Amino acid sequence: MSRLSVSDLWKGYASTEVLQGVDLEVHAGSLTAVLGLSGCGKTTLLRVIAGFERAERGSVSLADRTLDDGRTYVPPEKRCVGYVPQEGALFPHLTVEANVGFGLSRRERRGDAVAELLEMVGIAPLARRLPHELSGGERQRVALARALARRPHALLLDEPFSSLDASLRTRVREEVHALLREQGVTTVLVTHDQEEALSLADTVAVLRDGRIIQQGAPAELYERPADQRLARFLGAVNVIDAEFEDGTARTTLGALELRDDPASGGAAAGVVMVRPEQLDVRLREEGAHGESSAAGLGGRVERCRYYGHDALLHIRPEEPSGGEMLLARVHGEQALPVGTRVTVAARGPVTPL
Picture 1 (cartoon, rainbow, N blue to C red):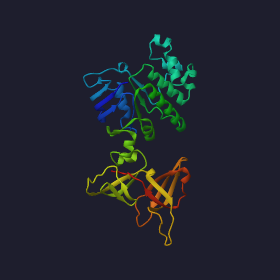
Picture 2 (cartoon, one colour):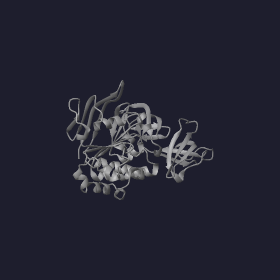
Picture 3 (cartoon, rainbow, N blue to C red):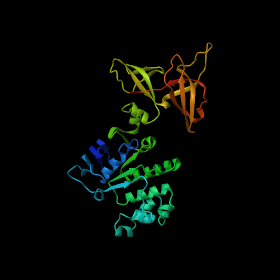
Picture 4 (cartoon, helix red, strand yellow):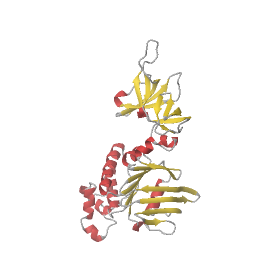
C-alpha cells in the first residue's frame, strides 16, 4: 500500500488555469473521492497524477517516490498507477480476457493471472465475449480488472459509474468498493455525485475553482462545511438567522446547541446550517383560540417530494414568524399533502456558517 501526495499543483491550458495550487493527501490503502462540478478540473488532476499531463508547478509523489516536480518526470508506464477512464475505453476487437491481459507480458498472459483477475471481479464466465456483448456494469468490471492487472500502487477512477442507470450504478459501485477495500489499493475516485462521494469514500476532497477547499471525512464535510456554498453543494440545507451566545444559537426554531461557538463567550449575530433531517414535523394541534398547543414554529406544507424511503417537505412558516421556506426530510410514510398545517422543531447541534 502506498501513500499518494499532491502538493501546490498548477496546470493550465493556453491562457486558462485549471488547477491552481491543489493540495491532496491520499492515505495508503484508502479511497479518496475528489468531488466537484463538471469543468472544475477533476479529470485534469487525474491526468497529471497518471502522467498523461505534465505539472506546471508543484509535485506529485507516490510511496515517497517523486513522479513529477518540474525537475523529475516519470512517464505513465513507469508510475505503477492504474487508470480507469469514464467509459472504460475497452478495445472493441479484443475479448474480455484479451482486454484484461493487454498490458501483461506474454508469460503472464499464458499463466493464471488473467483468469484470477476475472474471477476476482466476478466476470470469469465472460472471458470469451467481446465488449459489445457486455452490459455497462460488466464493461466497468473489465476496465477495473485491466487496471488492476499490473498490481498498481495507486488506482485512479474517472467517474466510472456515471454512464450506468441508477439501480445498476448503486450495485456496481458497492461491489467495486468492496473489491478495492479487499485489495487494499490506494484509490482516487473523481465524481460530481455527492451521494457517491459521501457513501463510498474514506475521505472527500472538494475541488472548486481549481483548488481543494476542504478535505476530510464525509461526516465532517457534511456537518461542518467550510462555507454556505459547500453546505448547499453537499445536500439540501436550511440557512437560518441566529443570535449566538454561550454555545447556543437562538433562532425562530428555538434555542439550538452549537457545534462550534463563533461568539467565543460573547454575543454575536449570524446564520446556522440546519439539515432537513434535523427537523421534526408534527401535525399542528390547535388550542381553543387557534394557536398551536405544541412548541415549535407553525407552518404549512407547500410542496412534498416523495422518494419512497423518504420525502422532502417544503414548509412555509406562518406569520408572524414568516421567513424562508424550510426543508424537512421525513420517512416516506410521513409524507404530507400540500396545505397541511404543521409544527416544526429542530434538533441540534447545528453549525454556524
